[in-house]
Length: 226
Image (cartoon, rainbow, N blue to C red; front, top):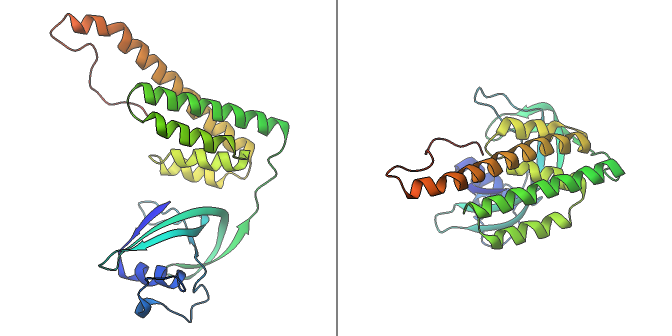
């Protein structure tokens, strides 16, 4: 997850988290904080009403760069889930007591088989998007190479990151303790999306001849399900 850090309180936080690295604003580093130099922080989804999700993700700062005006570009990797036990401080940044959550073993044959099906459905989705001109083939190769090396649990979280247009669905996947159940939900969504796109391509192909010989277009330009 890339983050753009520009708000004053978060510039203080991230300079403190990155203490020890080069190119920071020394005046913003709070050396007395227990998380100084840890490079780790938590994120929880917050809905439009300000409600905080009970399950969040611990992230580790992988890379950062500082801009001339002091803003930070930070790349982060999710490493573990946690449950919020209680809020300790709300300002200037949220401080919570949490417990780290351990994920179940994902080595069963059923989980392995379903993970392979999910990866296959995602490959089909990439190929369809390539045919429709939405992504480049070079990106396909990069993503497919990553899929081959993922354990089922990691794959389930990675696929969940694709559903970025539906935060509630992503949160429900994050809160699911079972890798098997998480993969089942993702398989249902991916297979449904692949079926829709295949039907869309088939219709476009069927009407393309008519559109060439008529003054109007063969298909409408309404909204799409993605």
